[in-house]
Image 1 (cartoon, each protein chain N blue to C red):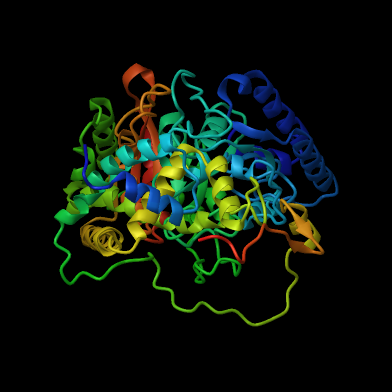
Image 2 (tube, one colour; image 1 turned 90 degrees about the vertical axis):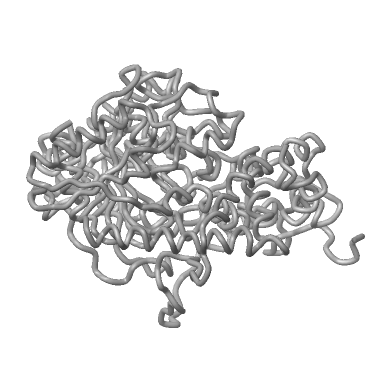
Length: 472
Length: 100
């Protein structure tokens, strides 16, 4: 059952939320040991939440648009009194004193949180192998990675552990694992979803977004979590457009541009390229016009990202100093304590990025690295603006390859970073993007096709995603 | 091997970032950061003369809210998560009078 079907059945009393939860917990019991999607399964809490939904239905109340729908939450979203680890030793014991805004909204909508999912430490990675608690594996082939950093949420949805998932996307961390796990994953327009309670990685790039088995479910989850929040000063204050209302309008008359730099990117697998071409043909058959578009500066997106994101991260992660929360390793004075705590608490990739960011921001290098990257960011935004003069949406691969073997890229940071070459430009621009499963590639593994759109053009983007899903 | 960053640079940046790296970590990072910075330096290839920098995708300036008293997070819940506390405060090791 889709999330939409489950919620309707629970609201109508045909199915109990308790039965829905038990069914998902049974699947977790069966396969979680090999998949390791979760840092923490909240079985008792989920049962209690489901019973409360069933009681509300029995009283004749409407528990909300996600009534009784099980959802898996990335473990960098705060849950009051429930451990929120970011898959890091430095926060392993932390129980936040507040809920993230998205968590509050999910509960109000009747969703049932079944667990906190694994991620690359502090969302830094593309394979969920950089977790202090061990890697997550791809449910389609457990010798392979699920992608990352939201690999736990994508794997949980793909394995049927939860009907929906929440991830966060700083450079592709929702869309890439969704593609590798064969589910739908979407990054909203920057500022559309409150970041209050999302543990910060790179604040000008981070967005929370939905993971689902269908495009319509992803749209429903998006509309549940987005909208202005006074607790996030970067939250968009104006009213957001309805996505679900126009979802079925089709693609006739829409102009679709295939991004040349992305479909021709180095290392793209032939099956992935063919999937994008077949998706384009399907849209053409639905009445859209398809052309090619160039985003010349986007080929520098990855370089710019690996200066901007670590620079912001080095500043954001300064807060883990052993004083207010998390791990402390004792030292003779404050600096020795801070430094010992951070060396013990952070994993190798997090240290690499803190070092990279600190270097890029340090005296003598600031303008050559960070300053230049910010100017390149402007050029990429201008490229997108030009493209949207001629096209309503853009089409691209999500990841150049299908899921790779565990360990294949762990010794080469740069090879790992190249996974995100097609997803990073939309984070730099603040624009939305969605990955839709579209057939299979090498080894019968899932392939994702990505639809990109201008800021706040989610309604059009989702219509195109729905048409691609229908043709898959 | 890249000449972009030296072992001494890595040790200096580690002090700035408050990371007590082991010698083996310094060796590994000197090599890895060199490779990554060589790649990242591709941004130099673009002519950005006269292009303003973008720090943020939204044009936000001074976001304000009404100055109203609202409940904050619970103090005892916050302090319960601290590694060390004393008299409702965070307790830390010696700060003043330390060696340079």
